[in-house]
Amino acid sequence: MEKLEAALAKAREMRKSAVGGGDVVRSRTVAAAAPVATTGWEDLPEVTISPEMAMRNRITALQGGKNAAPYDMLRSRTIRMMKDKGWTRLAVTSPEAGCGKSTVALNLAVSLGRQKDLKVMLLDLDLRRPSLHRTLGHTPEKSLHDYLAGEAEFEQTAVRIGANCLVSLNATYSHRPAELLQSQAARDALDAAERRYKPDLILFDMSPMLASDDNLGFLGNVDCAILVAAAETTTLPNIDICEKEIAQLTNVLGVVLNKCRYSDDTIGYDYGMYE
View 1: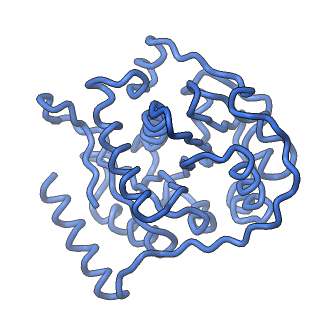
View 2: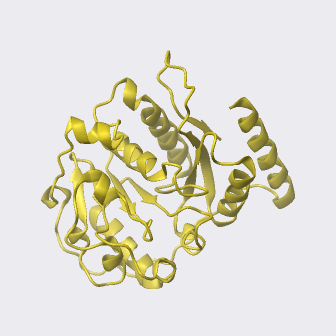
């Protein structure tokens, strides 16, 4: 793990020297706000996650405690770093499929939602292989991609986990995800949902970086991104390639090392986040 951290740090310093460093500034043109419906968070259906479902689907951040410690640690670092910069939109992606990015995104959202003074939205933008609806055991009336295309209302796609965590789901995959995510209509729809529900933070569960071009046309709409890598599976060159691509589109908040088999049980910490 120390070798991985050192190699990533060296690669970042080389890139900063080459391009001059500095944060990527997200620039959005927001259309004039149209009248919006008054549906609030409390009006959305709430999903109940049983202990058995939580264990089966690795939703370990629900109740706190030792099993939630990795995500609570990630939550605290995420809040600190994003507040320091005034950022509100965070993408979660990975180099390839199977790294566990959707599990990390959901647990991070749930951990954030356990804070009473923080409202968080999680949007499933892995439109080729959406999975959050299966993890939560809830198939929405309409898909998030239907809302982005102007064919559904946002509340038809959304559920709550507790009082402060809103999750927008897909019932099916999208037939044209790259084109949809790059469209002005999708950007306007996301802005409208943000104005309506006024979350403190928005998380986007994105598709893997090396699987398609979906992220290339969308990451400019977020303030920063986390890259989830799988221990013993994701290669260092792939991490470096993806970090480089993300850095050209938005700010890299960090790398989360997932699926560590040799964690230190004395501190209950299974993931590493390297800045």
